[in-house]
Image (cartoon, rainbow, N blue to C red; front, top):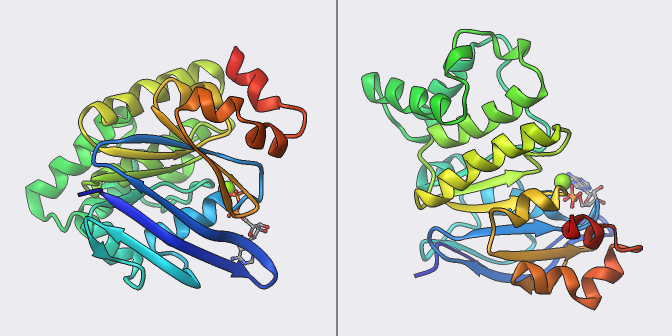
Length: 245
Ligand SMILES: Nc1ncnc2c1ncn2[C@@H]1O[C@H](COP(=O)(O)OP(=O)(O)O)[C@@H](O)[C@H]1O
Ligand SMILES: [Mg+2]
C-alpha cells in the first residue's frame, strides 16, 4: 500500500492554474524531491496534501484513506507533518513550548509522553540547548529547524518540507542534510520542495518537477535534471549547472 496517492488533482486560483491533473504516489519511507520555478504550484500542492487548501477536483489518499476533504488537523493526527516556507512559530512561547504544543495537538500525547516527544524533536534538530529561548528571538537557521521540530513532534509518517534549506549558508545546509537523512533512515517518508538542488540530490532517490501546475517529470534525479522538458522550464539551465557542482 502506498503511503500517499494523488489522482488527477487539479486546482485554480481564479485564472491561475496551480495544479493540473497531478498524479503520483509515494511509498512508505520514500525520499522524494520536488523542484520547479517560482509560482509553479509547489507550495499549493503541499497545501492540498496537508489540508490547508482544498483541491477543485481529484483524489488524495493517505494510507488508502481518502483525505481530500479532511481538515489539516485531522491529517496531521493521521501522520502528516509539514513545515512552512516562511516559518511562523508562536513567537512569545519558548522553543520547547512550540514543540510541546505540536506533540499535544498533532500526536495527541499528554503528560510525560508529550514532554518526551517534544524534547526528542528538539534534540533531533539540534535545538535542545535553545529550549527555553522565546521562539521570536531565533535567527533564520533556528527558525527553520524549529519548523522541523514542530513537524517531528507530531510523530509523522510523512514529512513535507517546503524550502527548508532556502536562505541558509552552505555549512548550515550541510547540517540540515544530515538531520533529514537521519529521519529518512528512520523510515519517515520525506517529500521535499527545494531550490538548493545539491541538498536534494544528497538525500532523495526520486525527483518530481512541477511547472505551471503540471507535473513535467518524475523519475531518478539524474534523468529528471537532464530531461529536455525540465531544461526548458528552467530557461538557461541554472538547475543543471547547480546539479553538476
Ligand atoms: N491563496 C492564493 N490565492 C491566490 N493565488 C495564489 C494563492 N496561493 C498561491 N497563489 C498563486 O498560485 C501560483 C502558485 O503559487 P505557489 O504554490 O506558492 O508556487 P511555488 O511554491 O511553486 O512558488 C502563484 O501564481 C501564486 O501567486
Ligand atoms: Mg513555494
